[in-house]
Structures are given as C-alpha cells and as structure tokens.
Image 1 (cartoon, helix red, strand yellow):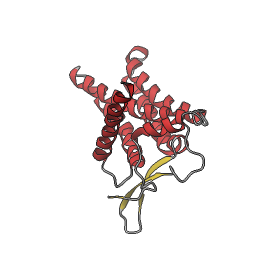
Image 2: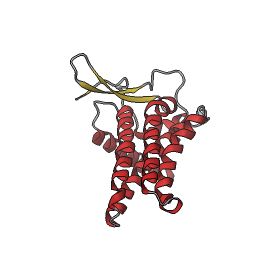
Image 3: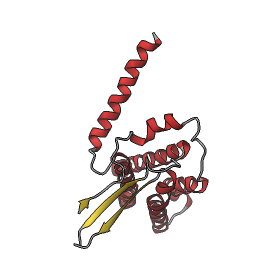
Image 4: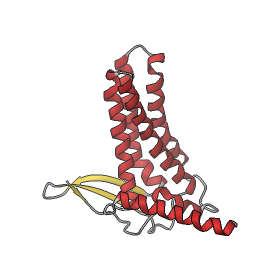
Length: 202
C-alpha cells in the first residue's frame, strides 16, 4: 500500500484556524446548508442512538444495526460529499495497473477562485474532531463498565469516524507532511503570537 499524491504542497494551517481569521469578514456565509446538515446529522444521530437505545428499545440487535447503518451512512457522506463541498478536500483509495493500493489525498485550496466558507469550515472540522473523541470515550466506558456486547459497535464508531478524521487531516496538511511536525509548528506559531501580543498590550 502506497501513500500517493496530494495537490496542495504549500504549508497550511491545521484545521483552518488561521485561514478563517483571514477570510472572516467576507467568507462566513453558509453556501451548502444541506451538506452542513447531513455532515452532522448521521454522526450525531449515531451518538444519540447509542446513548438512548437501551431506553427506547429492548432489542440489542435492532439497536446495533441502527447504529451501524448510521455510522456507515456518515462515513460515506463525509468522505464523498461534505468534505468536497464544505472544505474542498477529498481522499480515496485506488489500485494502479500494477495492482498496488494507493491512498490519494487531494486539496483544491489555493487553486480555486471560490474558497470554502469560514462558517462551513468550522462546522466541518468541529464535527469531524469532536465525534471520534466521543466514540473513544464510549470505548473506555464500555470496557470499564464491562458492557462487552457493545464493544464491537463502539470500535466500529472509532474506526469509521477516525478514518475520516485521519484522511482529511492528511488532505489538509499534505500527504507527505509529518502530522507531528505540523502540530508542533502550529503550537509554536500560537505561542509566538501570544508572546508578541503581551508587549503590545503593555
């Protein structure tokens, strides 16, 4: 399996934190409300179904199938639709002529005359980051409470939503860029900004 190209070789900021500041005055309008809705609908519904399933239904199989369908729908929607529309990113896997599997990470940032909306970008990254964290917490809760029957469902939630998070972060920072270096550089820039802001205030 080979990690392959990405179309954005420039240095980028993690999670659009700096980009949003630059385009906040004129790029805050939500241009794809339906995509924003479904970006959050399936993943939030899966979390709610997991929390409430034992209250609303006595059938473990029915609850498990419902949650898996919601997680699968979310994975497909986020991977194939909302990432491309809301932030101009996409990732996929393809097999070349030699039979080798290649992971493709693509970003249209910098090459488009119509950049993503700042509001849509924040909605996209917020949903993409928060929900996998919730499923990780569910995994620890399942282990500590000995609800082993839910472990497979929780692991599927972590894997499917974690895969989209990893794929889009690689699209954002570049397929050939070390995620550790990006995070370190980002924290360094934030620390430098705060350090420079203090003398200005005084």
